[in-house]
Amino acid sequence: MEKGYQERAAAQSYMAFLDSANGRIQQQIIFDAISELFPKTDGTAILDAAGGIGWLAAKLKTGGNRIYACDFSRTLIAAGQRRFPAVEFSHCDLTGPLPYPDGFFDAAILNMAAPDIAELSAALKNLAAKIKMGGRLVMTVPNPYLTYPVAVWKRSIADAILGRKPRLRFNRVYPAKKNIVREFNGKKISSHFYTLDDYLAAARQAGVSLFNMRKLKSQTDSGRFDLSYQMFRYPLILLMEFRK
Ligand SMILES: C[S@@+](CC[C@H](N)C(=O)[O-])C[C@H]1O[C@@H](n2cnc3c(N)ncnc32)[C@H](O)[C@@H]1O
Image (cartoon, rainbow, N blue to C red; front, side, top):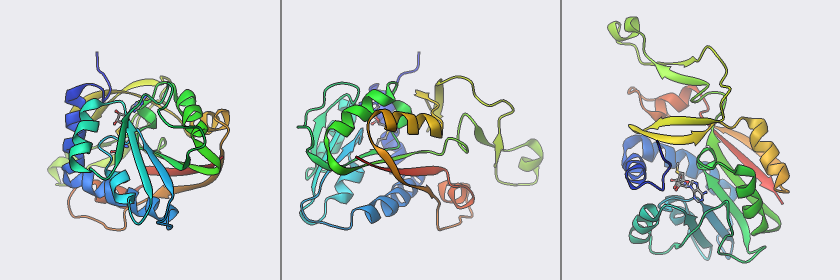
């Protein structure tokens, strides 16, 4: 059976993605959007939850910001501790008790990790408890209306013969299942299909309210079939900002 990122091979494949050209494009697009939300660089306490190797935490560690990252993959945490010693890493399972005092953070970020979490409302509830009143929960997710399992990039035989790039095509049937297997960077990862209303319901149950939502797009077109090309055409990532 396919597993999530707690499996070492899946974690290693995710690290390979981050170091690839597409991974760097994704990091840049996400960092540009998230860093706008945190212009203050003094004393803001931010948690990069399910932060993997903590690349985002490391980039947000400017001035006197206090930046923490936690994840349940020990492989990713160990790699992050080696690469980004300025970030304070902890092992955590977001669906269980978290190793921080209640009301400690000005903000928690859940970056491209929500579909990997089976009990999303429990995870958001636990995270919300660690945020101060008036603090923020920032979540980026694959746009549920433009990415797998709703749509996939495909190239027909005619496209291949004519040398056309793959096109985003919608699957014939709207997905009925929540538990899905995502193919990511050549690895099968067990994952979940959450719609926008699923995200909003989980946030509501966690006691945070939607403050803003943005569709993230690439500013650069690309001659290659890469993430810049894809995100120049479609907003494949959604950013949601909630307030407690
Ligand atoms: C797609 S990766 C994203 C990692 C990171 N946020 C980034 O942008 O590079 C999803 C991450 O969620 C973590 N994760 C999934 N479920 C989790 C849980 N219940 N508690 C903590 N981390 C979890 C995985 O270990 C993995 O690092």
